[in-house]
Image 1 (cartoon, rainbow, N blue to C red):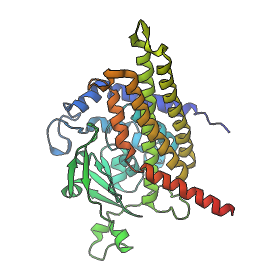
Image 2: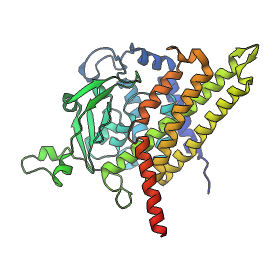
Image 3: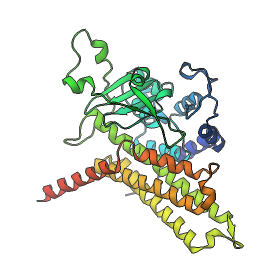
Image 4: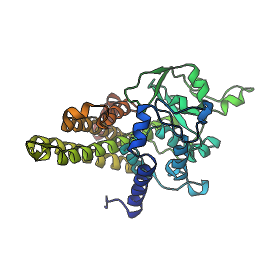
Length: 370
């Protein structure tokens, strides 16, 4: 069995990295974080006509990502997509995490796999989609979104962002590039009634969406909403993996060039141990994330999210330690990785939820053996 990436997969990863280095370099990231980034479409995103401040979305970049195929990687070629699979999406999202690319990437990619005009707009990067989970997690980039995917226990509903914003309140986000809103999730109409809306309310029933991709979930794990949550957890884990890998690079580079007592600090054993531990975390997470992308097993995805969250958070902390007092300054990028890792760790599948998923799988395996 060959676990190496194919030439096409390596080319995809390289192309994504080059695109982000060209269109979202460090200067652009710092502009978003510092709150003085101008909109990439001349200032007319969603009708507010001003600068994109406080994590505002660059619509021009979003459309370019759509044109490059980021959101259509799993869309069939017959529907205008790239026709690849989940492993390729994981590779692309790993690069997005490495660059700390802001925006509701996961929700927009998920929407591209649904049916109707929503999918077409999301795949092209013309429609920005965020998500509202019944679990009550904060909604990211609500002010920049066009529509919201509301995930109920089993069904998924499309809600205009303006409608969702009426019952939402902005909340303080630890990550300056990820604005958050707190809203009270409501069950979708199909989950409430178990069927489509009553006659005369067909326009409401049209808001409940279906998927183009077949649900491969096992018993007790079926349903469009459940599948989307699993995929969202995996893609979030991929972004965490990218961040964890990037902080390894930042720590090693700083250890090579920062001198103390006439020697690079990388020559000191304590610093070497920190960097080695960071590398082990990142590579361990990589193995599990890549495996989960192939198997799509709920237990594998839970393990991937757990390990990737741990790698992203702890690697950012150790990277900050390697940087010393300089790492605590606003000018350093280390704190941005730590803050984004904290936010992602609470999205889609928390540590407690992942542990419950793994425990349920172990219990099921033991019962089967008995």
